[in-house]
Length: 254
Ligand code: NAD
Image: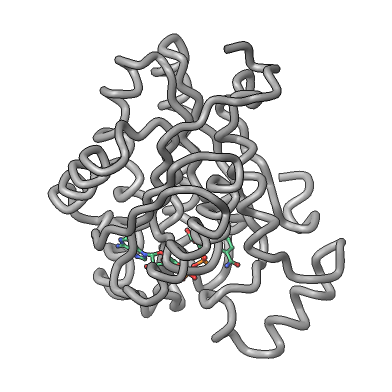
């Protein structure tokens, strides 16, 4: 099928961390595009069920799997379950992420290690597991969710900024390594988005964001999910190694 065909191929997508927030919005956007969508979640089973309901309401088929992306064996088990239920994963969205904020001098090894292991190594685990079959099918889309913090750095988030910057290098290495196999790999870098991750932050953070973001507001998960779904589409076939900010202009110039 040509990349410009109006009836794009429907495929199997896997969104990590799909029980809420940006992951849920990406899953729904992919379902709206006709794809069957598997999600994984760390502990929020009810949230994952709500995402499945939304996937079905969008007219598609879904699957929710409990998995820890930080653990390669858990990732392998999730893929086996998805492959048995839905088929080979051709669209992979590495969205699962955590924060363990703290000033550098007081940051524990656990705070550092947990964030690197989930946010960066987690993506390595899923990409390593997904790509042999993508290579066989000579098609794949990988979207890694970074952050504006990965480009600009963020005080109190040395671990998170390092992991998110690491994702950029990982994505571009994968983009170069697998381009000849029909696989693209791109980065979406959100700015401040209204999700559970940001709702616990103090009010002065929110007013700082509203004053600093050129568009004058926080973003919605759907605004990120739509860009992720675009990068997974057939028509995005000539985009690889790109970093697409969805940040209201916050990171302009980086
Ligand atoms: P969220 O906290 O609302 O959701 C995170 C999701 O990741 C949940 O579904 C959770 O179950 C899952 N998850 C966490 N650890 C996991 C693990 N070890 N294994 C499997 N799943 C795991 O977060 P969000 O705000 O929707 O953020 C999604 C992504 O976007 C994250 O990578 C985050 O760093 C990034 N991001 C968010 C913002 C923002 O302002 N919200 C900004 C920039 C980047």
